[in-house]
Amino acid sequence: MDTRRLFRIFALPLATAGLFVSGCSGGGASAGSAQPGSSGVGRAVPAELEPYYSQKLTWRECGVPGFECATMKAPLDYADAGGERIDLAVARKKATGPGERLGSLLVNPGGPGGSAVGYLQAYAGIGYPAPVRAQYDMVAVDPRGVARSEPVECLTGPEMDRFTQVDQTPDDSAETSKLTTAFKGFAAGCEKRSGEVLPHVSTVEAARDMDILRAVLGDEKLNYVGASYGTFLGAAYAELFPDRTGRLVLDGAMDPSLPARTMNRDQTAGFETAFQSFAADCVEQADCPLGTTSAADAGKRLKAFFAQLDAKPVPTGESRALGESLATTGVIAAMYDEGAWPQLRSALGAAQKGDGAPLLAMADSYYEREADGSYANLMFANAAVNCLDLPPAFDSAEEVRAAVPEFEKASPVFGEGFAYASLNCSYWPQEATGKPHRIEAKGAAPIVVVGTTRDPATPYKWAEALAGQLESGRLLTYDGDGHTAYGRGSDCIDTAINTYLLEGTAPKDGKRC
Image (tube, rainbow, N blue to C red; front, side, top):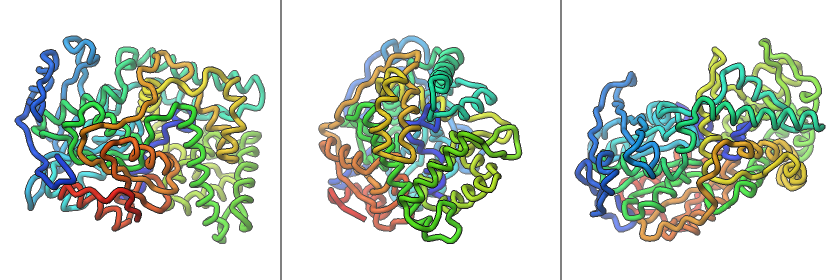
């Protein structure tokens, strides 16, 4: 299984959900265990939550050899814990041995909206280093609103097809109106189909669910590896439960102190950095469809090609033609992993010759569109979580238009589209319950924060910021391309993380690989 491809699929950009998609450590003590049903580390559970913390999971086979599945109950609304419940899908693969069992290792691939259960079964439970899988039960829970955990639903397949083709770089008031209408329709569809769960899919609520899971699994502390958005989820857990925080790895980190507009602009710059890396490589290749002169020229050629597709989409062999929006998504998808660069060169070359099918396939994979025209709930959950976690970046299309220059400064190629994609939360039916703030998690054991220097979706400076905010943060740097670092081929990174997970010894703050 290709690790890099899995991370690219699951760990999506936060800003573009709307359209493109817009244990103890350090001291080496035992990871520890608790009796199932206890809160761990001596903290009493509020009476209204006791039934959740004391529940017993019933494990069953679930169609994937070696894995077990169960359903965990959690309050739909933690402010009304005696009210409605929500069912959360859990999966695990027991420690294979040999060696001392260290408890459970919870994994989350990011998104928000990526299926943690799917990620566990497709990669983490079979692809994580053998010594880690030998000593930990590998565990995942689909966060509320995601995949198997009462998923948020918004649009039908045909509706989503139309949504993904809307022009995200409007040329006039009519195209701007069509774009805002699309965002309003998306939000209305979510409210119509998922109105009950929509107010209760925030990251804070998902983090509280993780503490219930920790307790029912019998772990005194939470051991966790989260990628991309999963770093925000892990940091939120550490903020809520610092005394229950074990060995946390936050790979491809977010900066929780940023407002949505700044976050989206930073991410725009991140994709520009990734594209420049791709372009510098492309112009050295004989098959580069963007010329063989310079990376700057390649960017100009790509932007011009997008403009051509905006004016005249190319056929794909099916009812959907390849226009600017879908082509942009296909290009963005390849920025997550340098292993996809040859595929992107080929797809761009084919599109220039009038065959849009290869680039459309890359966009469809990114959106998790199935061959039958249906979509996974990834994009729906992505928007639902993001729009609860932060107030919207903009209040109107007029505000976006005024901000386009700053986004284009961040990325001449992608800036305008990313700016307009930031409108996705502006028409959301639920008011945001979160706000930007520093996460310090005072009293938590050492937390390893991993940053990749040319990461497109979670810019490196975010990892620097989060490691600096966390009282016990340890920054581990990978000098390279692509999204996230663990399991991408760096022995230096993998050894540092494996040593931390297995022995509790965190790398020295500032270590570079």
